[in-house]
Image (cartoon, rainbow, N blue to C red; front, side, top):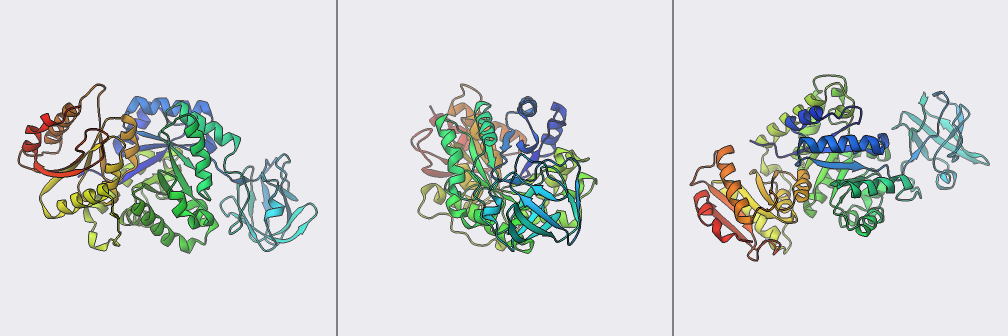
Length: 476
């Protein structure tokens, strides 16, 4: 059985040689993630070029930093103790000291009120604002810790008026356009306008790059319906989300966000610390295995590795472990445990996709096939989370890579100049060899009556032999 849940692996320019990426790919990786918080353009070039040497089926995803606040440079790490009083100022060009922590956002004293918490370095240090002074926010330290250079600063429950895109982000968006990257994952998305700002740049250059919105704060959660209308998919980024929102609420929010994406028929990624202990250890904890399994039970399309593959000691083992968990969970999933979701809603493509998945439960269908000019029908089939693989005949390699984020979809990328007839015939022959399809096995085929690009208009359930004999009707 093929693994249906897709795996994203973060790759660093410090470890991105061709053989390393090939080993991740063989272990089950579908998408390479590049985190611009830790990469320059030279590093990106190395990862992109080496990935493309491995396979044109591997999708490339680039992260922006988004609207974030960080501490300024410290000459030495700053040790703080419970009960200490410290000033926090919005002075991006001044170094932080033991008496004054400076941050990258100049207007922080205007936006943050007395009683607010400031969490530094993913909550390692917690400050509470006691009063507003002439020089900034006067804070009390609530737990001892160390403050370093350029560490994240979160202000839970406070709306920070940062611009959606920095000049640095814009430069990376343009890099994605120029280098034919598949996805841009935009960090700290708060509302639809944050995504529209990127889409406007993509439209200016007539770019097909797709936007993934990283949901990392309360505002993003509250505006999820509007955000979904303007993006290709969502990433549930549980790291910052667990700082901005009480951690005990994260499991329910994760499930709700996954369901929203499934209803919208858009890919959803669950990320952050999924196999965190494998950064240093060859085996995950039982809790981590359960966490990965639950994300799959909740119907996520993809799961993501960060430090595990970027700088961890066991990167290939981490991907292989995720693959094993995914295969085991998918094999054991019971659809009776799913929460009913109305996915059809008067949509022809959705209706046919639903019918194909339901038919595969009642009939001895071996695989589902569909044409994929834009990938829409394949993504719709993915949303219904059937138990069969979906073979997507792609006439554009970019569309094939975009489907690397969709549950259970296996793109068949076409060769240049291939006709629809040739694609269909070659795919069926390969399925007979690789998946042991017999001549009389049933296939569910979703296609269009009006040729490529005419939309999905029919579902046909037919034997492999029958489809091969009728392949002549598929002409360009």
